Image (cartoon, rainbow, N blue to C red):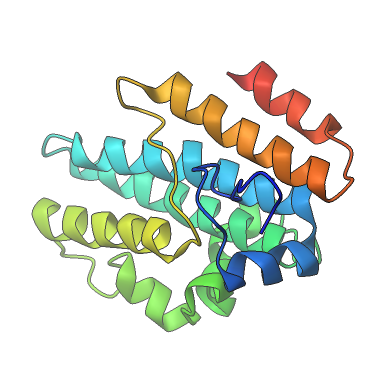
Length: 183
């Protein structure tokens, strides 16, 4: 636990063991990148899935984006050893799976509804919502809601928590600069 009780999720709660192991194995900057993808891309995709309004083709496009984001998160956790070009990220993920979720390629294909081309809108929407929620629930700590009324406050609180962790670990905070500029 850090001296300021900052957590990697930025919620001010004490970290649990998986988060500490992740920091030691991949480094703080990579772990912040992993959480940033969850914070912005996975949550935004979930919101888009929920608001897809019976547009099946749009939902199918979101399915591809979701797989790309999950593959990117998996690559970040591998320490950059599995960085895959965007054009190949979906086939790669469907072949190798998403290790941080414990999903093999076939399980991922089933989770995103590739097992049945005749899926209706509601079934595909439910599959994708479940995968997004599973992803967010599987992370140590909690992910601030980037879409809510207090979104900027929560994101800034997360960055402040990451900054405290970086300070306690004597890490350079330069990697946070790009995150602040994104906001």
